[in-house]
Length: 508
Image (cartoon, rainbow, N blue to C red; front, side, top):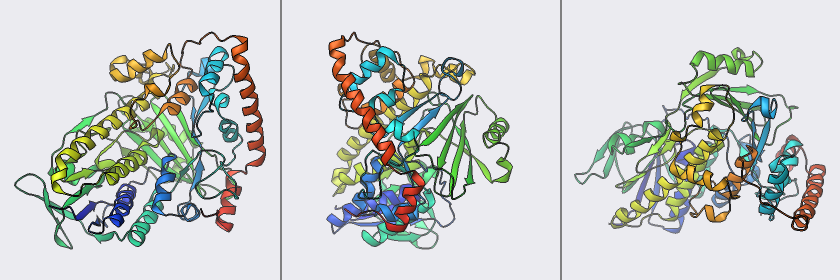
């Protein structure tokens, strides 16, 4: 039997990202229709306001103008995550920091890494990329003359998640003819063979489809409640499980950092994301190591005693992912598929990755489901496990010893065998492409390099003669000149954003 009718249950960023990916696929397969069913009673969580550079590729594929996106979603440019105090303050100084940049390390990254390992007297990111200097100068990654989705440096965005979902919804409905139904799903009907047969809704009655996408968030209406797919808990590896979140208005003249600020504290970290009109701040912590009252008090300290002036809320986080993302004729995406924690903007990243992969290999017939679901689940499990490793690495490499939270994070029993093997290898060798043998590594070589050496990972430096060092030294000098030119020529964030709102970017 052909698969012709697809239902996405749940809106928000996950649902409407899926609608655009699958809607684009449906345009090439005229017999395929996509319907999104969204409840009017369930507000989106709206915490995920950070993205990674891969989102630019998706937005461009969807046909969304970057100018419109920036205007509509209060978006700002994000070139990095600036990690503050993730290392011991007594050894590395108060407010020590490093950048996980979005620009690729230079073509001579390995040679420059060896050069850095020999001395370590400057920031690693500043050794291999001019973007470090640009970020520290609070400059944008592009100019008003650069075309949409292109710039002098790699970048992603900070955005208003609710407005982003609205823009994605509008695009999916108008460009890809996605049908939108407002209704509550009250019951999921299973066939005798175990697959989903239909949905019972409060306003539209019974609705029958051939394939179902579960984007119902933590409720997981289909993948969990109906299909009973087990959840793989990762709390023994990733400890943080709560966040106190608040939005703080900013003035039109406030400087906009071109990066997320991630500041470590005794039992977790704080995100600080600047949009064009406000800051989104979240105090992320582990309830095992800090109680709720202390978390609220410490967030108040971070805001200079002004937390009471704003509405805030505490959000519990269930850390882990589904044992199988694809079960029978249903695929879970977004929070229904899993959630790790906000570090490194993994939520939108994994949703976009999973939805794009599904759309590129979407089954045409029910006969295809067993083999395709097996492959999809293998890929997703591998991707999730490697993201767990990457996030865990931020914690286990820290030399902070001011609380049991940081000490326990260095316990090898809380790390996967794969992560332990990689770290053991990298004690002796600088990471290279061959260490990342799968293209389904959501975080790749360059991401690991920035975090490893931002946190002063002790790879043994190879002996390099003065003659061998000449070329890296010359290249370093060229990078320094490029950095100076970019800092001089690129505009500040707010200046560029105002020009984009007034004039727009060049369309491609």
